Image (cartoon, rainbow, N blue to C red; front, side):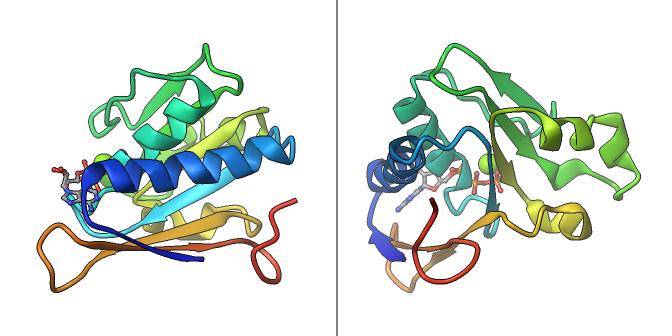
Length: 149
Ligand SMILES: Nc1ncnc2c1ncn2[C@@H]1O[C@H](COP(=O)(O)OP(=O)(O)OP(=O)(O)O)[C@@H](O)[C@H]1O
Ligand SMILES: [Mg+2]
């Protein structure tokens, strides 16, 4: 599924739409990997996603590596692996534990830990276009086509 957005609010709306789809099919656990350059809109996407879950305070976990949000209809674990110096650091943030927990993981900079990611993850690729403020958002579901449930 490919969407083009022209401002932050539209990227948030695409995030919200993905959350709505996961909620619609009653999904309790998911790993959403957000790929894309610095400042492309990964955190904006997460903000919109979380809003739909009922979580209003979303802060980039750039320094903390992980933010846990409760208080929505699902727990959301927001990861930013940018500062990870290697896969050995995953243990110290309790990465394996997050994979086991019931809840939705939103992971920025997943390529920092590519080998440790669950194969059934939802992959979201964000990229800039030649137009200022425009982004392409390509969402790939595991398996065939656009099925998530
Ligand atoms: N179409 C768009 N969608 C999302 N953000 C946009 C768009 N157009 C402009 N922007 C701007 O791009 C920036 C996106 O910032 P954001 O923190 O979401 O990026 P990020 O991918 O999470 O970066 P980082 O890799 O540093 O975590 C914001 O300043 C936002 O206003
Ligand atoms: Mg970010």
